[in-house]
Length: 264
Image 1 (spheres, rainbow, N blue to C red):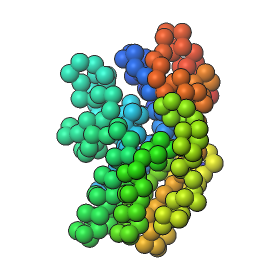
Image 2 (image 1 turned 180 degrees about the vertical axis):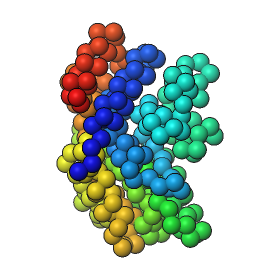
Image 3 (image 1 turned 120 degrees about the vertical axis):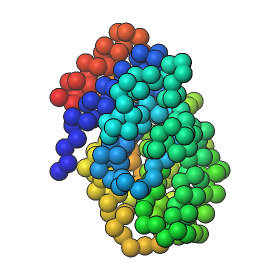
């Protein structure tokens, strides 16, 4: 059993601090995917593997993980969202090795990842390409075009992870255009799919991805991780409000208290 409790706590606290000091929103979506990012950067990703954050509005979670592995200094991290920063609200390219592309417009990270995976196949490189999408990403036409491309080109070095927190910008995902992050839909597209109920169980994320990587198949690989928007802070969980709102002092104090208690 892998134990990442200290990381679940410390990185959530760092995310809260970044959002509070910058008076910024998109807290809920960072808290929903931070455990997936911990699994990727602290356990799954090898040196020459590539990672793309398609849900770029969760950049604070990515920056916090890159700080944890030494890619971004603490001094640099503290400039988040400030004038002149290299760490804007959505990831910007050409500064850090682990951020090769600007992302945030949903539906574009997946095509980028598929292109890299195709290039690695052509060059006979044995690395994997990870892309983390939101279930909102799966509403986009480019997502399904890329799914066809990935299946047709047998991109079995591509690992797609969907942070399925079931809430997007203006409503529950199912009430927008329906559930486009269903296991059956992606299997019909030619993907090898594993779905996990608790997308915050880092051990289960790691084990599921390792299983997908080990299977000898020509299919691209997909993990659907069912998550909770705002995970760890009671008043943020499963609400659309915290897709946008910043925290005031009282809310920040309560959030810190809850994270310290929950991940003690």
